[in-house]
Image 1 (cartoon, rainbow, N blue to C red):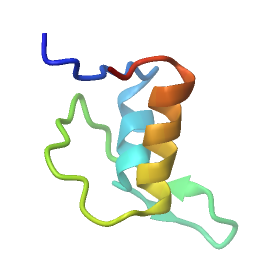
Image 2: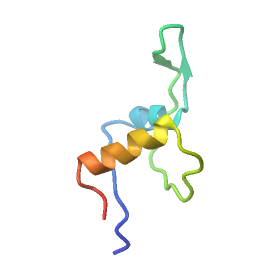
Image 3: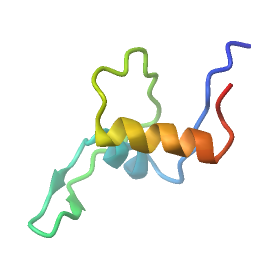
Length: 65
């Protein structure tokens, strides 16, 4: 295989929130979340808090190479 980590999420909305497909209210809670069934990340772009979260999740769950 290509050693590509596969991350399972409970709901489509959870993945949509991870991707930022939502709006946030004044308290920072996600609202109007658009669900997403799957994604493939080809280019990470710049270092962000979201990228750090995903990389930590992969490392903590032993999903990496």
